[in-house]
Amino acid sequence: MTEPGTILKERYRLERLLGEGGTAQVWLATDERMGRQVAIKILRPQYAKDEGLLERFRREARIVAHLDSPYIVQVYDVEMSEGISFIVMEYIDGQDLKELIRFEGAMPPQRALSLLRDIAMGVAVAHEAGLIHRDLKPGNVLISKQGEVKVTDFGIARDMAGAGLTEPGKVWGTSHYIAPEQAMGRPLTPAADIYSLGVLLFELLTGKLPFPGDDPVAVAIAHIQEPPPDIQTLKPSLPAGVARLVSRMMSKAPEQRPQTARALVEIVTRFLEDSGDVTT
Image (cartoon, rainbow, N blue to C red; front, side, top):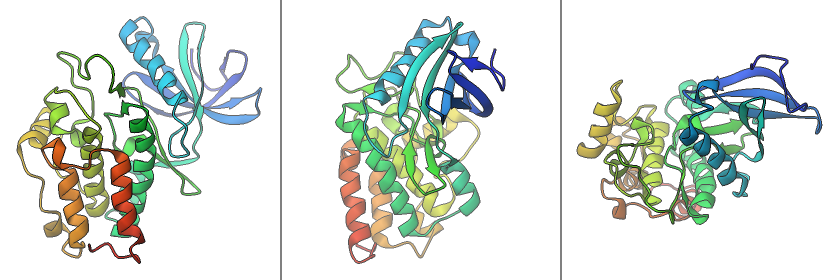
């Protein structure tokens, strides 16, 4: 049973619910042994006997535990207590990028590109470890009150070197940010994450999604078949170089995008460091 005051493993005291998804809840907790606040991701009880989900849950902890970056939420431990499976993570006192976009709306290019570079820094570490995130979206980016940017939720990340990067009959990811090849269930490369970051950059710059809608299938089909809206029509003041970057990142053909997050970091850094000029 999970409620405020519950103590897991005689160590972690649950304080309050921070958020929840289809398969898990995230709680703010106090690590009474270390004297610090942590975030605890708890698998919902109805999924505790689902070996597939349980393994995916454990994989997330193993994956992130090996990723050393200030741009990725740190994992401290993975545990089971009285039938409850949970991951103990770094607690970020702040908000997610989805909330920030809702509050700020369309952002100036410098602001949007700075956020993108920090996100890409975290994703680059995953790519260099042979991993593809597969679910990059504003809700999976946390921003602390000090402005630190952290990528989280590697629950559906996949090993590039593993046997097959797709699962027959299953398409993981969030339709508003999904790469065309991912929506079609094809094998993925890091360029799939670049597409998702392109959608995210589009949203940061315009305050809008390129393919809005409530029907996830229709949205996924739009990513596969339709060109994204002309971002300069939506934001005429946007420098041409930034518009070209968005277009390149959201290319339907994976080989036409920057191939890794590290390559994207280098591109964005050049934009930002060219005397503040983002017009090239």
